[in-house]
Every structure is written in C-alpha cells, then in structure tokens.
Length: 443
Image (cartoon, rainbow, N blue to C red; front, side, top):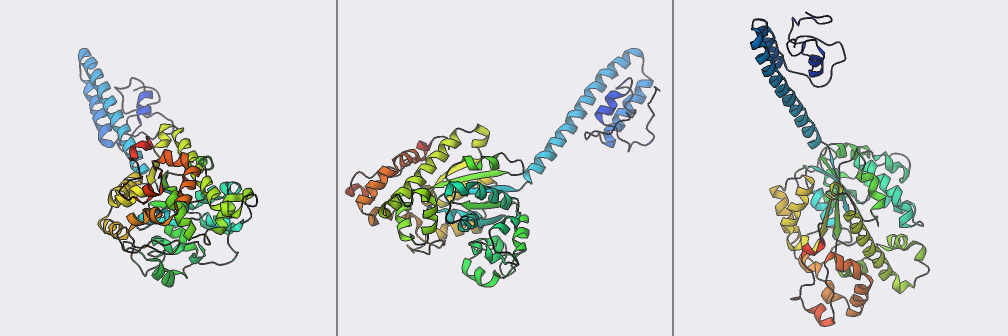
C-alpha cells in the first residue's frame, strides 16, 4: 500500500488537503496520512467518505476507467478544496463582523458635537464617552494644544480598547467613582445595566436623573460597561490635525471610523461668545504661545482662525489618504443634520453599522424640533435646532460677521458656507447661505 501510509480504519481521522496531496499515488489513496502537524484546512467525514468510495471503486476498474476516475476525482478534490476554503472565508467574515467598532466624532467646540455624540450614545449598542481628553488638558493647563496631542491620542486608544487604567495618570490616586469622568452622566451606558440598574438599556437616558442615582458606582464598572457593547464612540474637540491620529487609523487592534463634524464658523463664533467663561482654559491652551502676543479683544478671532485652519488641514489630509482609508471618514455638516435629522442620522448609523431603531427615530425628531432656544453649555435638550443654526444671522453685528468671514474664508469656501456680502444679505433669511453638499467633493 506504499511506505509510510496506513489505511484509515476510523474515518473520524480526517486528513487535510495537504496531507492528501503528499500521499503516494494521490488521489487514488485519499486514506493515507502524512505525518506532519495538521494544517487548518480540514475535510469533513462526509468528504473523506466520498474520497474513500472513489478509492475502493478504482480497485475494480479497468485501465481506461482508472483514467476517467482520475480526472473525475481531481475535479472533486478541487471542488471540495474551494468549498472548504470558502467556508473558512465565511467564518473569517463573520468574525470580522463581530469585532468592536470604534468611532471618533472629531469636531470643535460649539459645533453641535454634543448632540451628535448623543445620537450615538443613546443607541443601546454603544458605549459613549464625551471628551475623555479633557482630563489630559486639565492636567496641563499651561501647555499648548500641539504639545498635548500625542498624550490625548494615546488616551483615546486605551479607552477604545476599554483600558480605563489610562486615567490613572490624570486623576487623583486612590478609590474613585465613575463620576470622576468628565461629563460621565452624558453616557447612557453608564446610566444603565450593567453599571446602574435604575435605567434600562433601551431607554433614552437623561443626565440629571442619572447624576442623582448613578454617581456612586465604582470606577471599574466603566471598563465593564465598555466591554459589553459592540460600538465604542468617543467625541473629541482637542485635535487640530490628522497626523496625530494616523497611528490609530493603522492600528490593527482598532476598527476605527471617524465622523468629521463641522459647522458654519459664524454660528460657532456666536455660540462661543455666549460660553466664553466655560471655554476660557481651553481657549488659552489653543492660543498657546500666542496668548500674550495678541490683544485680548482679538483672541476670539485668532482662536477661530486656528479652528478653521484645522478643518481645512484635516480635510486635505483625508483627501491625500489611500482610498481604503478615506472610506473610514464621514464628513457631516451640522446644518445638514438639523435640516434633515432623520436622514442624516440614518447616514451616520449606516456608516458605523448601527440600526436606526424606532424609539431613536422618535427621539431624534423630538430633540431637534423642540421650542427652547437656549440650554446649558454642554447639554442636549429639545430645541428648534434649525432656528438655532441660523441664530447668528440676527444676533451678530455685521462688522463681526465680515471680519470672521475674512478670517475663515478658505474653510468656508471648502465647506460650502457662502459669505453674507452685506448686512441686508445677512438678515435675509430667504437667502440660503449654505451651498449644495456636492461642492464638498468625494467626502
């Protein structure tokens, strides 16, 4: 029967394709075992039985019949090989679909990012944290944004992987509660099971009740909550170029998708004026070494110049990436979101593989069509978002608008925001100052 080959008495000993190929007189001898460690491509009992039938039938065939059987058996072996290989590919795709999805909402202050964060955070499959890099900046308030980018980037990576020990470097030593996290109450995942049993995971969470009922949960529950969700979403406003994030994009342990959220600079400027005290430390870090060199009355414009330039730099960097990496980015204008909240939210969810559940559709509609025109600095309540997005047109003096349009002209042109050429144009709400999204190019 050939040296080194034994007939299988037990068909449960299923040889691999490589083992079969190495046997003498293959494919007539599919029952030979090659004495090497088995490869991962293994035939089933049924497939081996079919091969053995060919072997025993071949013993009784005439010479011409043996040739015919040889050709047929070769075809069968090839079919079985590709069938098994295809099954492995299916298993790998299935495993890929089970990998956690990591989403970074990349934006700037007062651009609607808290709302977009909540759009993700209210989904029962999402673990969401709002601005975890706040802890880095507040630990080094005398530093600059550029010096802190790498530390902030490394913190994001650890949080994406649910390693919350990274916060040890930025929090006081000793036992701590989940309430040690900045804006933790904005996370539905930290207000529901398995962290806090006062709210169910499919409820829309509200920060104030959560703050009262769930603040004393131990900090290690944050890591547990993170690991129990299929999507980890972080919202950040503290990155000013894409280069700092390149290692996250190419990290094989991450499945990173980036939503780049932008807003009309004139609306951002108007909102920043109303929250200047809340943003003072952040603004000083953004200005960095220029803080003392610039007149105080010019600080808001110089800060906006940095923010607008960062949007331009990020978009140009994305467009220079390979196409495969460009597909990991989604550019979203806040104005498009508030004009068509259901359609744009559906677009966001599709981008990261989430289902737009009925109760979330109701919530999105209600939260963008409320009557209130004001809210606390970092809250997301029911307001008329469409009117809010246009508030700068009747509340900002045209002199400020004109100067801001000069400061942010490149960003406005790239992102589809049309300038108001006069005070009359600014006040004419029938004049649409938002161009068609197709002017934004492939993004």
